[in-house]
Structures are given as structure tokens and as C-alpha cells.
Length: 450
Image 1 (tube, helix red, strand yellow):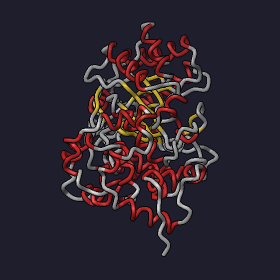
Image 2 (cartoon, one colour; image 1 turned 120 degrees about the vertical axis):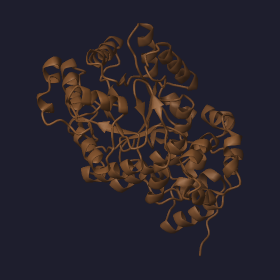
Image 3 (cartoon, rainbow, N blue to C red; image 1 turned 180 degrees about the horizontal axis):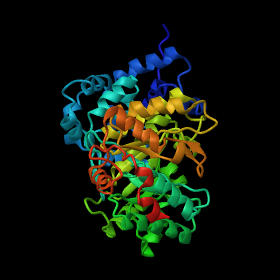
Image 4 (cartoon, rainbow, N blue to C red; image 1 turned 90 degrees about the vertical axis):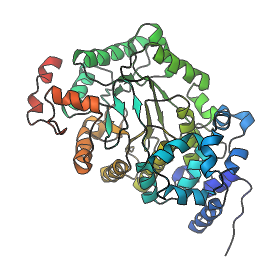
């Protein structure tokens, strides 16, 4: 039997990754299934401590590596510090790794450690361990409580037309969506247009006293500028990645993210908490920016969660299939990546949600998304997307609909954020069990928003 040897830890990690087109594109993937399995066997014997002494991206060249290493909590790490990657997998699947133990452990884990152990796990392992993790965040409501799953109401419009955005908001609210956030991806980066969107969302929330939060998903520097102009910003958004160079391609660094968080908190708009950041990520972003340093895309995705963790976010969303088939080729790769991302994010202590999605040129369809949605819901996903008809007409990709959220709630008995659930019941849109009212389609909200 041929035995492959590798010059460093990042090469071993790449060869042990489950197959995906992005790693093939980067020339990092195992050449055969045999090599992939043997790399996993070698990775299982690597001590967890090695990830502290052998950074995959050089410490001196990368502020993300510096953040990860300098912020490592040795005391929290101590209970598993003697384990190998394989031993850590066994521990995670044991009764000893309960909700309380995993919460204590999170500050002691690095993104590279959780990425490594995920490579040794079957899908059912990723689901089981993630289901034991509870991460709770608060702004105007409480996200992440056991037995609950939130939705982002995503009322995008290709021209930011206020009537079009309002119509989609109405659709989502009538179908019980929006407890995670009412969040719009703007078509424009003009500050005046962005301000109009911010005020539209804010006016709706306050007019109907909805216990949720809004976000216009513009660049963090635009949010800071809007705050300086007095705009009613709730959550501050930014896309992030797992290396300094990839973040630079987004026009950000860690100091800018800190400035955005501080600006958001200065408004004191949260009523039950001050988690103000909303981050989005996606496997392949560093590679697409030529900023991957020879590291596989799933490990770099986990490193993006290391960035997010430093800023106490309200929501973190892996937009799993959005970047395209160059990075996740088909439904099988998208499903695996979604489960990996959710597992890694939750294990690191993040309120991880997932945009269960694909682009129209990927080898995937809505049945694949049904499968991933159902698996993530059993794994305790914090939130999913609510897009009218599951078809985003502004971003031109396929996601999950308001009705998809209703399906998985009924299937698994998942409830909404408690404050939002109580509001829906109070205004007559649902019954006390969270089921939609029969006459919701004729609710006065229709006339009030018209």
C-alpha cells in the first residue's frame, strides 16, 4: 500500500478534506479516494496542541492568525489538550461532551482544530455534536434557545423599490418570518438610498411594535457613515473571510470591524441585549480572492468564524452555495459543506445560521436544499433564510422560502424567538402554539401596510 507523506500540516489538512471542487481548482485536493482516506488516518493522529505551534497561515503575515493565537484560552482548552484529532472526535461523540462542557470548551478551541476534527466526521457526527451546542444572543429578541429556529426575512428588490421591499416584508410577516432579522441586500451603495431603506425597515418595526431587528447589508464603512448621519441602524453587517488578505479584498481589517461594532453599540437600540454585528461567510471566498495561502477552503471558512467570534455577533450566516460550482460543485458538496460550517461555527461558540442555497449553474436543485434544510434543523441551526418563493430576484440565486420554514417547524416542532412568537400571537397571526391563523391572509396588517 502506498503511503503519502506531507511537508506540513496545511497540506495534510487539505488532503484529508472531503472532496470539493474549490480544492481541486486550487490544486490542493487528494488525487484519489485512497489518498483522502489515508490522509484522514494521519490527521487523526495529530495532537491538538500542534495547531498552536504550527499556524497554517504564518503568524507574522496575517492578523487573523494573530487574533486566533493571541486570543486562545489555555484554561478552557485544558480538558482536551492531551487529545489527538481522532481522540477529540471520540470525546465529542461521548456523553461527556454535553451542552455545558461544550460551552466551557469553546474559547479553548481554534478554528483549525474544529476544521480538522470535522474532516474525520460523517454527516451524522456533525449533526449530533452540533445539536448539543447552545449559543444564545440578544438584541430586541433572543436567538438560539433550545427547540427554536429563527428566520431572516429577506425582502430584496432589484432596484430597491420601497413598494417591492414592503410587499416582500408583508409576505414574510404574514407567514411568521423575520425573528432573526429583517435584512435587505441593497442594489445600490449610495448613502441616501441606503438611508431610505434603513428608515423603511425601522418605520415598519416601530409602527407595528415588532420585536425584531433590521439590517441593510451594506459595507461596514457605509453603516458607520449612516450612523454618523443619524440613521436608525440596528445590526451592522459585513462579509468576512479567514485571512487578512481575503478581508482586505472586502475592504476591511479587524480595526474597521471593531469600529463598526462600537458605532452600532453606541446607539443603544437593543432592548434585551447588545449583540449588534451580523456577519456572512462562504467557503471559497479566500480562494476567489487569491488569498488562501495554500489552505483548503473549509479550514479557511472556520478561520472566518474565528474572526466573527471576536466581535460578539448577533448572527453569523454561512451562505453555503452562493459562490458557485467552482467551489462547491453539486448538491452533495453543498450539503456536506453546510453541515461542516454549522458544526464548526457552533463548536466555536457562534450563533450560526445557514443560507441553504445554490446558484442556477450548480448541479443542485431544490430537493437538495430540502435535504440540507432538514438536516440542519435537526442539528439545531440558529436561523435560515426566508425569501419569497425561495427565488431571490435581486441576487439571482435559489434559497429557502417562508413556506420552507413552516415545513421544518411543523416537522420538528421548532418555535420562533420567544418575543417574536408572543407578538405574532398577540396580533392574531398565529395561535398560542405558533401555528398560522387561518385568516392570516385577511389580517389588518394588509390594509395597514398598503
